[in-house]
Amino acid sequence: REGRGLRYGAEVVRGLATTAFQALPIDRIWVQYHPANMAAERLFAGLSFLPEPRARPRGLRRGQCIGVTQRSAWA
Image (cartoon, rainbow, N blue to C red):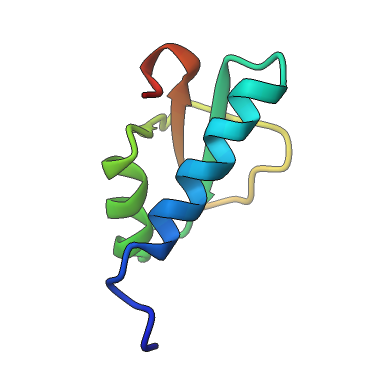
């Protein structure tokens, strides 16, 4: 609890995505989160993950929200 609001999550996701784009031949990264998790929604929106309601990636859990970012949008 004491780590909430300190942007550790954003730092971790940013580092993982940056490393993935540098090391792997991928052009998209998607995340999935529960619709009631407003903190996750804000986190991913702040990191340029856009909602992708029609996405159906393998492993998608029913009722989850999907966010996607593209290599070209990642800074």
